Image 1 (spheres, one colour):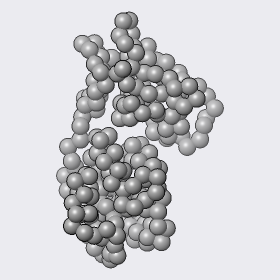
Image 2 (cartoon, rainbow, N blue to C red; image 1 turned 180 degrees about the vertical axis):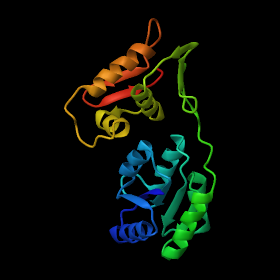
Image 3 (cartoon, rainbow, N blue to C red; image 1 turned 30 degrees about the horizontal axis):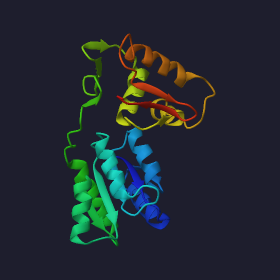
Image 4 (cartoon, one colour; image 1 turned 135 degrees about the horizontal axis):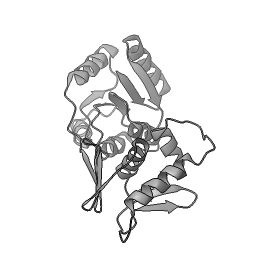
Length: 223
């Protein structure tokens, strides 16, 4: 499995990472919630292990944001907060399991394997902004009664924007999520694709849904 660990305690992060790698898993780690959410939105993970008390975006908010984005990947929450109410809060936020520190790696490994056997949650398959509907399952886009034909990259960009509807999506986020670039290629590849998407989405008398935020990126919203 490909596992993302969101944990700011480096000792715990290394302990869990090393154990999972030795068990045959591919592991990536993040030390704060904001970066963890960015990576989660990029997709491709089979399991998230999230510490509840991480900086920038706490674990509960991170899990809620993951579920709001329609990401059904299982979440195992790690925390030193072991009261019943804390566990309930974690599970109600969207976590699939909850493990209290200190823990043995054997128990963590068993829970990881159990989550791997569990069927995935049913994710929302349709994203909606105004009269724009993106069907993630059928890979179709429709504005009002009109079908919109998008190329693969265009579809991925629009999906990323609709997952973050109402929030600014930066050029860096697009390059990382759609092209898997962790550097700026120095081209206008993003601008070219966004221009094409706009010409297909915001047509005729339709109210514009995609807005440019100068110096920051793009946002999709139905005003």
